[in-house]
Image 1 (tube, rainbow, N blue to C red):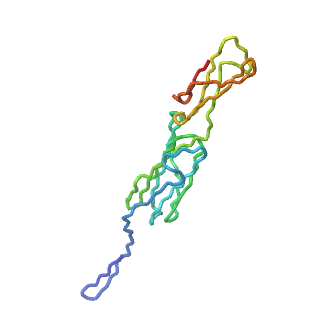
Image 2 (image 1 turned 90 degrees about the horizontal axis):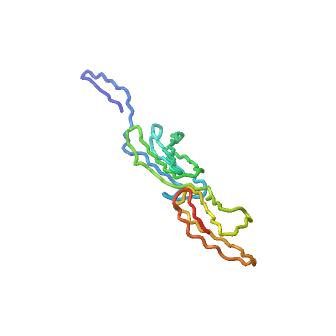
Image 3 (image 1 turned 45 degrees about the vertical axis):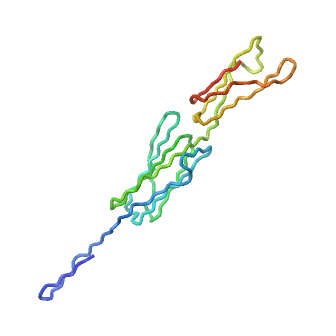
Length: 193
């Protein structure tokens, strides 16, 4: 914009040129690649996207919170590009953990987005199971107690079924019945005679 003024004698003067932008639209954010609340046994790759007409002055903040076995770590993703109207960045999460990713943006005019959040679980580690109480091919006069131990970070969603057989002196196999294991923590156990 500029202005021109003319006085009574006909003298004209042109003002300096002033450029500005009127921006009433907040940036638009999205996080895709995984369903909110889902659990995966493989690495998870998410895509974070921002759409903003005046992209060069965007302030984009991406925070990652990871929780595993009661330990919480927090980090930021700082390399989000601001080089076009539609910009995106992919990030792969390959370590076990419960992840919360939050994304916010604000443009130079002060238009702020709603917080975009996604939660997901990555569990690439198989449960570990141990049987204690005797050694292989150990012989006992009396029944012995066996201890079955399961170690798993996501114990609440595990279904542990213990099946086995025993062979009697005549070579006949019999099913071994073990009580249902209750997953009460990262390390759960049950005993059986």
